[in-house]
Length: 527
Image 1 (cartoon, rainbow, N blue to C red):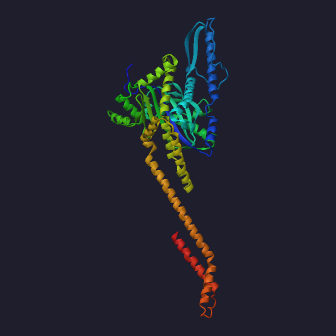
Image 2: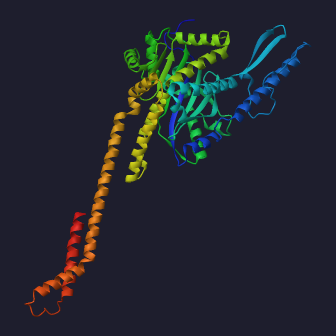
Image 3: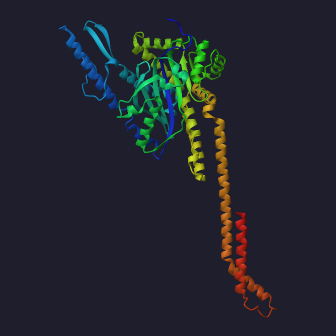
């Protein structure tokens, strides 16, 4: 086979879509967790049993057909697993079912072992088993704090038909954090596809059909990958009776576990491979005839790459990541598979297991760094324009922002030094996603607004006190004016007679009214 100098065909990969959001609710973290965990979209034991029931029925049907067609009287068909014949609303299609035959020959018994495998069930079981392992790995490399401060809820997966007619599960996981920030993650496997949709930045071209076998009517509402999150977010909003606040901060991690042009060594990438990696991570990059972007590609990859000898992460400055490995890394995983099972990779199931293990390691190694970046972006994107410009609202925004900073910092406590290094690198190189300068300007603006509001509040308080004292003096000032005129009249004893119709009471009222008019005009002009 001719070696491809570029990526060529992606033999096994995965796109991990992240959709950050929050809920406008007064419910606690525990209440939200329970509501979503009990909702229709949460993957429960009953859903797994439905698939197993369907697979058990398919197994019995196949065994019965083999037994009827066989002319051997001594042939004994025995179902040793999934002897379940319960009815299931989930249907297993024969095109997704495979039979492995192997010879059994030992002193106790001999015969042919027929093993029925189904692509959907195998994929679902693999992902579920990896999820259980991830919790232990997370605690080891990220620390107990990260594990305790968030809950991962597995949601119902979508059945996806790729552009090459291969069927995969799009696994869905919800990350719920104790500060009530939420990240919806969708994992789309890619099997034997080319890179054209990546280069065009049209991910929907990877997919020809999207099915939801769990909720009635939902399958027809999702025709594109970009529409899948809406179904989940809508249901979450309905189940929690909350408004879902979306920030349009979609994030994408592209994982290439195996491809035709995989480099032999990570430090020796071909020119074509570098250019294609650049076109994928920065897609869409305009193509011009006879004009190469190799120089830009090399500079970008050199400046924005993180990783060790056999693993490389290329960071997207506007938010995103692409990770891949070299031939040495995949050979190590195949060797580990041999040590674990006692035999080499033999069929596509073994191969998928190895590649899925690679994807999971690339994911786990970068998960905390990606999550920290997204949580910081959520915190920076709080939309205070929807709030009324009362001082308490501005205080609430600033307090929430500061508390979230403390929370996000706490998630990073106890992690490996290499993880901290990766977090720092990702934050630094995703500057156009985090936009720290704009965030700083926003905080300065909020602080200025708060200072202005506080100053205005103080001035209003001072003016209020002054006016209160003034009105108090005015209201109770008439007797004082009258007493003043009485004293003056007594001092002027040499005036023996009063002016007709002018009494001390009359002149006191007139003087009081003149003072009120003068003060009123002064206050009106000042206003």
